[in-house]
Length: 332
Image 1 (cartoon, rainbow, N blue to C red):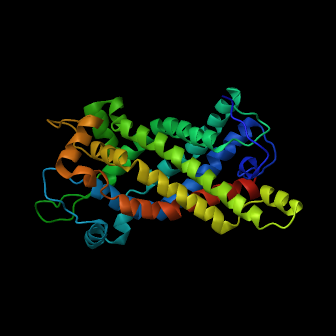
Image 2 (image 1 turned 90 degrees about the horizontal axis):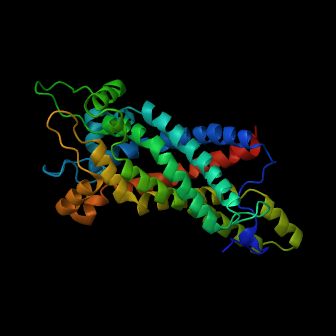
Image 3 (image 1 turned 90 degrees about the vertical axis):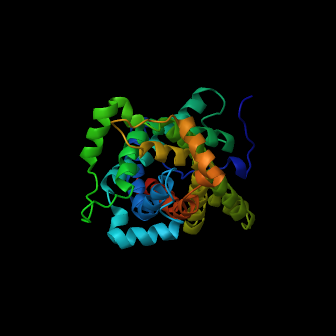
């Protein structure tokens, strides 16, 4: 059945109205502005992401090193100082730029797929159901770009074991991680944990874009109700939301993205931080998930979820606000 809509607030534009541009120029904006927004968001969330990875990657066969997020923060700062939480941020900054730009780029391609299918007319704003689909489409393709980057990031973030002579251990470098993975597993080793990334990104990005657009349209509807004339209603429909409403919409997107598919991220992180080489055995996605479940149950799959959802709210709010503002006020 074709996707249709009536001339109500549900079909009025929630997207920032911008002049019509060529497809290549739209793609360039997605890549540049998505990269900038991703870098800003990464600086905000990175210490929390480090704690999340350390909580997720604790071995099954050993006593838990951290009792929770606060204990992980305390031990990490005591061992490495606050800046230690930013260890290895260069790779994640590149990853954040690549991830966010790819998300917005592939989301636009997803819209073109919907338009080309004939399910929705180009002269109408896409309905929410289509926007949830374009989010999933975007996440699925972005996952293949993201998995190798996250493999390096996670291995940098995991805590280092104390050396036998008591000296401060030296963390692995980006090149040493890349070298070891290629040496023992070849090119395909860089996509270890791909299934987890695929599930997290396709499902999570559906929620990320879908929740943001849903919240945005709800705010437009609320704002319309306060208007006293049709002229004022029409003006509201073409203006950007107040900054706080944009932030709330973005924050809700980040929280939905991280909570709904967090178990897939936990399994992915454990797979990517598992030892390589020698007699080390690599579990499949389902084997790793079964191991976590048998040892720690559902709680183990959501270890680190609270702090992840907490940090995702401001980070995602900044990402969408920065991206939309750049698209509106600095068009290329």
